[in-house]
Length: 99
Length: 132
Image (cartoon, rainbow over all chains, first blue to last red; front, side, top):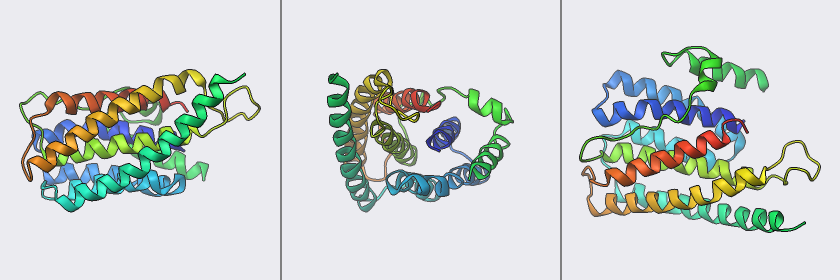
């Protein structure tokens, strides 16, 4: 299922240059529509994946201004993501170093 | 559930000019490269969350049992070895971008190279996990 999410991220990447260039409202709506299709799939994988995808939708719907509250939320989200990744890395590295 | 996923993938395929599921699967690293002097905060937040999404996927992958230990859904140590430094590099870029957003509230930021590096890292990780 993660492969689908990866493909959606890759599709999203094709639209980011348009965001930088100043996409029209219709284009942004299309981009949001693509990402929204990822949410139910991401929820099945887990909240750690679903929340960043929701954040992308929120960012695209916003006026472009990033608030301190949004940055605080990112900090919280990423502290959990980083901790989970570090735990998984330690376990995988130990397993790969073994016989 | 599999039908739903396939339907979703095909629906997405029609939203891009290439069209078709097969073409979607061929899409390689396409993360945007900023060529101007600044990047708008909206694009930075999307790029940061795209990286966070791939970090979550990487964590799930690393939690799989190592290939060769029995289960058919497994973790390849070679991919593991590539993914770990990429995630660490991406984190550094991500944190730098967030610091720039805090320091310049509401403004576009000038860390174009860092933004592009994060995009390249996300693309590399996407390619790594695309077939997993």
